[in-house]
Image 1 (cartoon, rainbow, N blue to C red):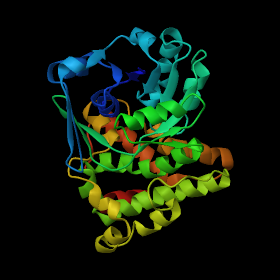
Image 2 (cartoon, rainbow, N blue to C red; image 1 turned 90 degrees about the vertical axis):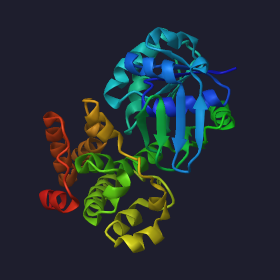
Image 3 (cartoon, rainbow, N blue to C red; image 1 turned 135 degrees about the vertical axis):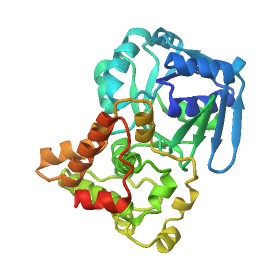
Length: 334
């Protein structure tokens, strides 16, 4: 049987690994001691916006804190924050078997490349997590938005993708992971805005001015990608350019055109909001910052995203969200 190691078992890692464990797969969770203690005591309860719930009893969960446990892995699903990718690569190179397959399930577009440059001989594939997962405490993790995992198809990953799907973890394959990751990054440009609102995701997105700011960030990103000759793959049913245009429509029209907004439940929050609550460093440089950096390379301004980065970093320095309404943020970046 394939043994999966969830390296960086936080909200996403516990949800993904929990479903694999519930599906009968051997899973080693590797994460921080505080969460390890919680999961060892309570097990895992995994819920989603469609009101399904899966429980994994403590006795069926192996949660470790020592990266040396990577030595037992056939597959390493990397769920650490982007800032920790180099450290993760070094740990994988030191401890994981040469045959272990490494799959990045991280935000941003460059993490798989960072892992590739740091591991030993292990093959590395990119991956994309389309959904939001919130830690509700006591081992409860809630998926608040829809979507399937997407994993880069390589000779080493083809059977793994099938196995993950068979275990009940909905997973699709792609031969264009960079296009998929850039498409997801454009959607992730709202990650920062949700943190700045200090509101649940659904409530924030009902504010048309927040959506206007999001649309401005996406349009700026599309201009940069066009200059760089990168074509993003749509993350969901709508083309990114069309999606950016409809964000400024009134709520009642938007909900008809993009019914996925109706599937966001009341518990959904962005990972950057969670990072602020936990006093962690934000991934803003790997999300909005990726647009700004690429813009500099191709000579295209990303002024709106630059302003969002500045405001986010000021908020994290203060240790709290400014709790803006959409009109205030729109005025600040216009």
